[in-house]
Amino acid sequence: MRFTVKQGREQEFLDAHKAADRSWPGLRHANLIKTGEQTYCIIGEWDDMDSLANARPHMLATLDTSGVLWRARAIPCRDQWWRN
Image 1: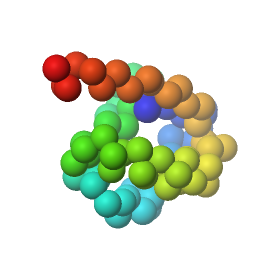
Image 2 (image 1 turned 30 degrees about the horizontal axis):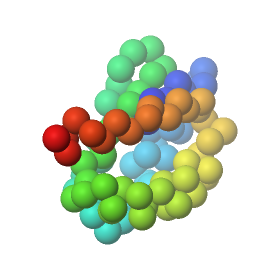
Image 3 (image 1 turned 90 degrees about the vertical axis):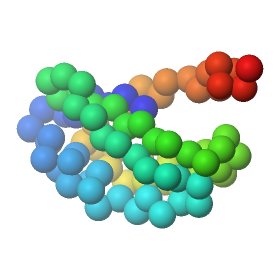
């Protein structure tokens, strides 16, 4: 997911990311990457697509808790490339 952090709220965004509960089954790790001025991307590595799908409600709840800090753009999952 890509994020654009609101002006003056970058440290709050980083703190919220550090404090987030990511103990979801199947999540190997998640990386927050700064991609530009006030922009970030979170990339998660999952055991399988079922683990990712099962964690969606938890991810959405986490996003809801800090949504005032950023605007997000979801990137569609195109999982066919690793299934072929």
